[in-house]
Picture (tube, rainbow, N blue to C red):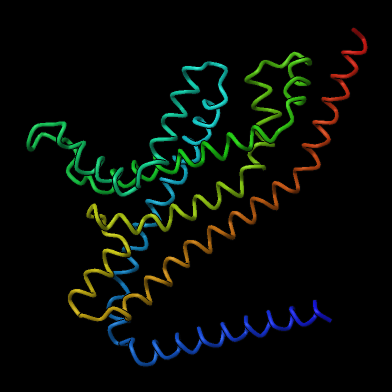
Length: 275
């Protein structure tokens, strides 16, 4: 009875929360949102949305690629390589993304003389570089954790069959490590999308930049916030769906990987028995 009572109380509280939020949203939309302004500013938000999509796609691909390299460097048998990778991760995880963006956007051009920096529109390249370096550190740690979660015996089995360390890592360890790290990598890439809101501070014409301009000109905060919310949700929910598909695909391949690992173990044990 007590369990049923707790369940009922939880359901009632959840429904009450939904009702309160829905009522608040309905009141804001009906009383605070200017429908004519909402239509007028829509094209500007679409343009900013396309810019954000382009930045996210490029930065995501580069950060995942960099993260794989950094993750492999973290488990390298070379102490120099491992320590350099660890220092990279500690720096980019230990300092704010906004600081890193300022260093790249304002600091790098200062390394040239006045008017000599070769890139005219530096804001978008700086944004891509900053997001890539920052999130590459987080992906690297996720990859390292995924590799460490793979049993050591699988590397030993692959090496006993004549595979090089690189080949064993590519064919046996990394596919399983990727599956182990996929959820963490997916969450990090969703955070990357939300981090694009900081790019307005380095003059990138993204969604929050449009909001600031509309709000300053019209003194209306709630109307542009509607588009801010909808466009960010469109990106993050799409990425969540993509991550879910990748996780399901990884689960479909799990049995094949386990079968392959079992086969390697049997062959490894057979080789040891023969010796």
